[in-house]
Image (cartoon, rainbow, N blue to C red; front, side, top):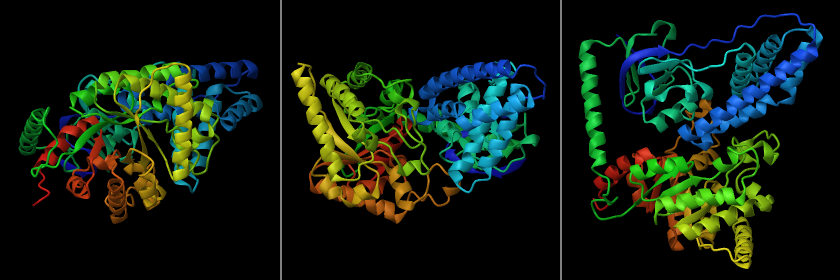
Length: 541
């Protein structure tokens, strides 16, 4: 028996055969050609087919990991149209009179090496994206139409790392767990594991070539990976599995019960979702409402700006499905790593600090007002609330209020029914924290987006795996900021919740309640465990 350690991204126990996902680059042979124009026409056809496959993967990924995490396939579609990349392929085909496969492989190697050698961590990670789209093009050019991983029985997937394409194409019914040598807690592998509710480890320094087909155990609670376990350990782990199953049954018994501490403090538990397909999961896990509906999926999955009617139908479905329970819709948070070609956004050196969220909305009022009209119309069919991201000033909020007033006047003039949804903002920048007292006078509620708040407070890119050691979610500065926001919100009589991943951190649940946080909005699977934790707390003790 051999034991390896790693970082757990989702708990639980998995026992099964290990399936090593081998990376196999498409074989490429250099061939001389007579007609470069004909060869480049073949390349263009391959690009069109690759783009079609990416669109299919994108729609599948939206259902499995949500719009925010599916956006990588939008980025890959953009890379297919990259001018420098395509010029390189064309230059090689024409000057060397060689086949498109060889030109793509040569471009892949040179571009990936160029990105890998850059100092900026974000740019270094683009090397993997270049390889991914190149392999997709080569698969089309060489006639490989599948690209899927064939798995006959439920297995533990082990790999050096997993690309978004690989994770989405896996048969999820056959995956017991993920184990990767590389990756980060924000990688697509980690996100998929949390979405699927299966144990997963990253950063496991295991010799992949030696473990394929062997029996393995993944202990997502202890961060251990066992290869060829002995009978004593197998028996122990099966007992832990049974205990975990019993725990889940106990959580089921909490459905319908209140989120109340032992001393009577009530807390609201809401669900974070990315699209209407996530609504059943929120309801099945007994969410008291939707605390964060990421509306940008409507834009990310469309080839053009979604119409008012298209958006209205989606928001109306949310309102009606929640049947009187509150559903908070966040206005489009496009930008940074969530890009749409038709927005015409320019490349930015530091996109996390760039043109995104409310900044786009306020400089594109035509697009913003279309969404606002759809939201106000849908609010007539249920209890919707509207939340605005990336706020840094009172002036921004007042400009939003002006646009809201214009929308209501237009709807009234056209005799269109609409409701009066509450208006709230996300607190996710240090600037918003420091002026939260003034902001609280302008809105109905706050929701603290801890993912970005931690990133901006600690100056640590949450998408960069090298920053994991510095990304301290429990940093005193972060917790003090949350406390400041709660104090200022309550001073003005408005409620405040947490909708970032920190809301599901049960090591902090009691501290959040002592601060006075009114709501926690988390991934659906965390609702019942959080309910249990809340019901164990005695704030008077």
